[in-house]
Length: 101
Image 1 (cartoon, rainbow, N blue to C red):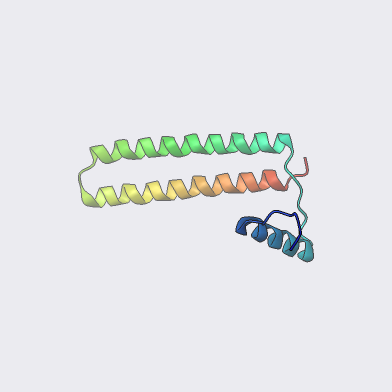
Image 2: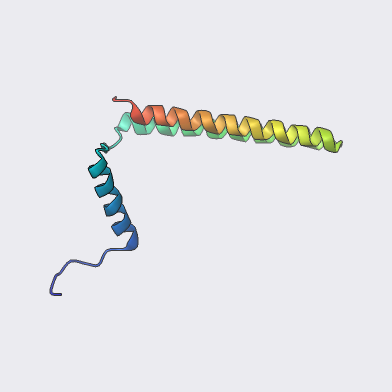
């Protein structure tokens, strides 16, 4: 017990186990390039603004609609749009991460 190594947190231990598991399975870990980081940031900003725009338009339409059936239809449309934008964003980010730039 005379080791001078500091104790590791649970997070550090978990990360070490995951890295070892990835290495055993042959998963390659490579850091993102600056260009990839910039492209991911740009994609996130773009889709964040699209999601905000969809939210504003949705709220505007809700304020004008009083029929419960119409409001439910608007809610469903908004959820579909939000899910579509989120899926597009995630796919674009994954494509950037997997590119060998």
